[in-house]
Length: 426
Image (cartoon, rainbow, N blue to C red; front, side, top):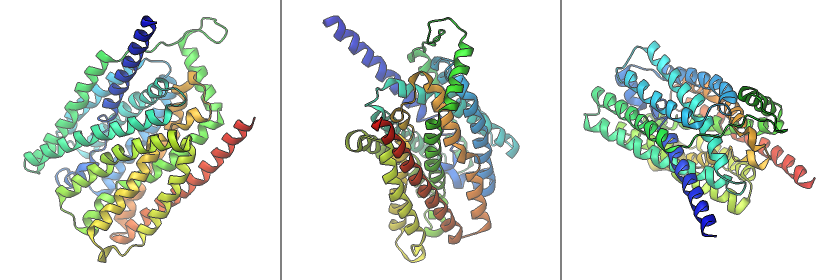
């Protein structure tokens, strides 16, 4: 009996050690690619970038991410996380060194594309697969919720660290370079740590009949099974709806600067809280409500889609020129918290709709391919709207587009719940 308990304790400790390592990577690998979150205005001032240029960079990187997710449908079930995770983190750190030299815009685009390869092709689907397999069917909401919350904590600490470095160097060009170097060093070190701590995956080389076949054939077979599974596509498009709303959160940052005239440093602090700090609030709450109250991530998302959509419509028509700045800050942060609570669990329905665990890597990659597709075009759309419709009217248009995506998510969530009920009835 003692031996069994010891083995269970060892298995549990390995599980949470792996989970913590994955969470550290998830909380740091996107910092350079999302430099705009805390340093949108300094990027414009010291790197000479316009709203459209920043939007184009994000969209081009998003396009690369799209093809990266497509490639990862094959890669995640073929290559062990012990290789994929460290490689992606160390590669990100090395790319940051080049970014700190303030290269030409064309090189800036190349760096952003390579950062997308590291984060979205090598790291993210592998991390999602690993987290799903670490938890059982009753832990999915909590596992992904804790992941999002812990990632938010790490995000916030790292981002405030970079903001502190920026301020310490004078909040100028040198400060931005130092902040970029800080963002580069952190994932590089975590990549080395992850290679030491993560255990290699056991990749099967036999089929269901016990016959020995090549790993390439198994990976391709899993990929085809995922592509033929309509439920995976439904979950993926639900993720698409959430991510479309999420893309708009970036523009709360310049909105508060232009409309409410917040100082640059406070804008940076707000950006960190809006993009990272809210994960600490929305992630665990979303996971807890999903598992303990509603017992369904899809049902939870349907409810929050309604709340988010209504809030965005109301906020779009507020008299922003005549109301207190705190109303704008609290309103945008509340909307962001709702979006992050959905982000925390939007892959959890993979378990709810009974996606086979042996094709988890392919399923998560396909879900990410479709779900994160808005990153390939929406940043350009939103940035162009702001450049062509200056002032409050441009922001109002963005908020209403976000509300429309929330409405689409509500309809799709309702449809998925109908399918789940039919399956349960059978």
